[in-house]
Length: 535
Image 1 (cartoon, helix red, strand yellow):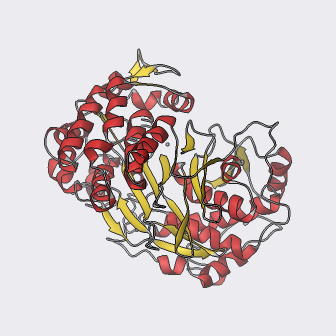
Image 2 (cartoon, one colour):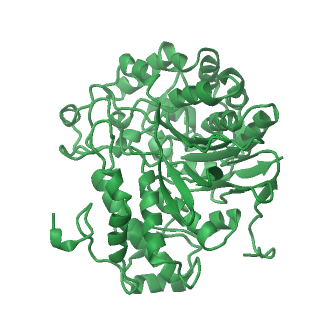
């Protein structure tokens, strides 16, 4: 498609030597500085993630988790790391029920898993980095100690989190000003976080998971009613582990995802179904296209809620769920004439049986490609701040269930079902696009929507991110304001129940490696404050 320069928007970014696309300009610049100083794509990604952990505090932080896909140039391989943390050893359904919980609560200390991000940063850096963490964390340290000015999306998200930040005295003291959110253009300084980042720069992950920083995190959690121990945190130093990625052929390419407990397999399922249904004649914003994609997502998320869990503790049938035979049968359930009123039981395609995240990507001059995602899960995570350490703690454990017998029921040292998923597209053994779409549960829908926008319907990288979004969730189809009213009406007539949402769906970044022309083409989502830049 040719861009209409009368319309609002921006062009994709073109560069030759290296590129970074992140959700904040400060992080993009930090990544480029590392690339120009001789660092590789992974070094730049860690530096950018650390900056985002300071300047986008509602979305990410060192108290969160991380997943990464890395494609080293010339190897034909995609390396995956799972940097998601585990529940504390005392986390049993019985203990949580005894503490008064009947279901997982997002602001409860029991929803805080041991953060995995710093473990992952160190493991990735040691295995594939060129520069040390001492150098890579310097930009983040400066933003923490000198402060940064709050930008539009950050201010908007902060304002909507006042209730959560008011629940704990420490969070209220440090993240609210006279009981109100910090506002657009305010300077925010975090000297305690700066000191913690300095400790990690000197001593690595051990400085975070042991000693006074860990003791402060445990004390904050204990005061909030948690059952975490310093031993739980000490084990967290090595929680990140390299895993075998999963993938699926799609339109002559190979789409790679991290395996469960992440939900990347849903992307592969949705892509498989929509490929079997064919390209919609009406184009990327046709009712036919949207309806098929919604129905495919409904089926994939149905299976997620039944099966997705920590594969070290339960069996997750990835092979079946991503198989051609199964996806062909699921695609046959989708009719262009009407929405499914009901779906077969999870894992079945036959009625008769009846049985707030940051994403960034970097490509360097050597062609190394990094797809990196780091998150606190919901806005400001649990809202529980370890004040002396300056660490806001995630609420990833909210992804667990208390339902005994369910694969995703909370258990000691178990990882919860995870929403954050980096993506990588390969072709002929070479990376052609690291990409990702943020937005909690929306991510598999968002990734598959973006990929189809670009590779199937011909939108450029930036247009594919700009395009309006919708998402089947909790029995409704949540639509952004950019979805035309006539399209909403037609979807409702097909049996969907569309509702307009207040905040847009997620945000995303992507870098296309155009090998034929020897250039990099980057895009960054207008739903966030960031940008893609190259040199």
